[in-house]
Amino acid sequence: MFDADRLIEECQAAVAENDSHMAVKQIVERAVSDPAAVLKGLGEPTRAGVNRLFVSDKLTVLNLVWGPMMTLKPHDHKMWAVIGIYTGREDNIFWRKLKDEPNRIEAAGAEALGTGDCAPLGRDVVHSVTNPLPRLTGALHVYGGDFFGDGRSEWDPETLTEQPYDIEGNLQLFEDSNARLDAA
Image (spheres, rainbow, N blue to C red):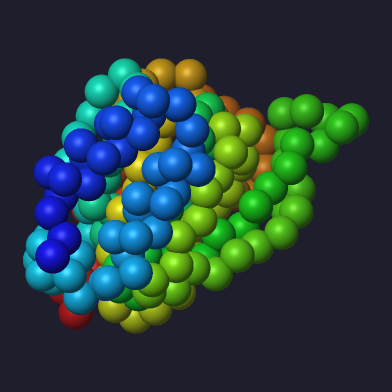
C-alpha cells in the first residue's frame, strides 16, 4: 500500500544520508511500480495542479497532475529531480544552452514517460513537459531543494531566450487547464 508520509520520510532519510537523487530515484521507482496503490493512496486525479506533499529547503515532494494536452515551456530546476508517473504520460523535451549564445537553447533529446516509469534529472537539466493525452496525468515529482525558491530560469517558447522563472505564471497554466476541463 502506498503511503505518502512514508514516501516523504524515506526521501528525507535518503537525502540526509547521501544527498543523492539516485537513492531517491529508487524510492520513487518502487512507489510507481504499483500505480494502482499510488492511485488508491493519493486518489484518482480530478484536477490539474501542483499539489505540495512536502516542502523544505532540502527536499520538495509534489503530486503533480498535468491537465489534458497541457505543455510547460522549457525551464530548469537548479536542483536534481526525480519524476515517477503513476497514471498517464509525460513527454519531456531536453534542451541545451548554445555555446555561442548562452542565453538561448536548442533541443537536445526527448523522453516519454508512461505509467510506472521513473526518471532522474540532473541539477542543470533544462526541459519542457507535455501531457499528450486527452486526460489527466499524475506524477510524483521529488526535488533536491525548495522547488518554489528563487533563482530558476525559463525560456520563451518562441525565441528560446532565457528569462526569470515565473512561478505564478506557471501555476496559472494549471488553473487554465482546469478551466478548459470545466468547460468541456
